[in-house]
Image (cartoon, rainbow, N blue to C red; front, top):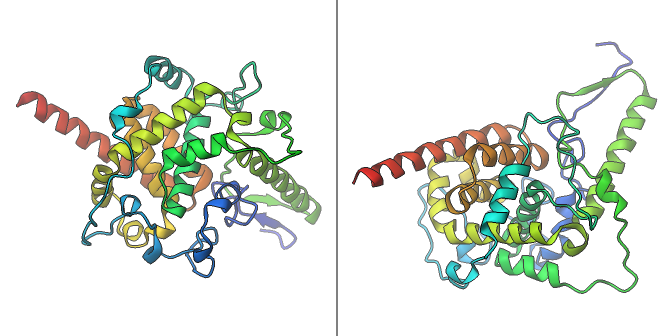
Length: 318
């Protein structure tokens, strides 16, 4: 490499190089972090607490391998009380609109409906991840947190620029390191990344009713209800399939574990085809996580699906 070359590393997401304060996830969950966590530390800057405080509610405690599972108390109404009447509509939308990892960039740009709001299942999965992440930080019920965000009053004078939705890209993750030959080119790339981060922060922190269609908000709620319904079971599954370092440091892997919970719940409860769900989960990991997370999540989910098929065959034969 020439001496005057400048290398910019874009490991999976150039928009979030080190989970800085400009990260959409950090902005989204700012209000959800209790003040008691402010003096604690974590392996990632945006997780300002350690696993001894994660989280306050036993139901949202991620067990470590070999450790006892705490007694859990139900925090929600029975899932049967949260049934929707447009299941088929949402399922069809999820199957037909969810893009695969092989889609081109133009195919997976955000889909906007006639009202100027996101209407793709990918937007619902992303919103569900943000809500689940924030609920884990504060130890709250994700379904109620979603409803709280949806029904929150807007600040006087608040205005949201809907044109930002057209510039928002759900697939804003990078690839190999980018090499430039001048400082000017490096500065231009950094400015572009900063602009994308500002757009993402503005969109993801806006009131959900201004950003997402009613169909997508209902689908998001269905995803979170499914997560709550299967949480305890999937904690045990994750304890078997996840790598030891994830289980030993759950506070540093909330994003990755949340993606696993969302994907497993969508497959087992909502019945979405596992090929679609795994592709979507891997893309979420590429977008919001770092390192080998996408590959590990892919492997964990494929193991989960194979075990699920084996269990179904065993039940059918008996």
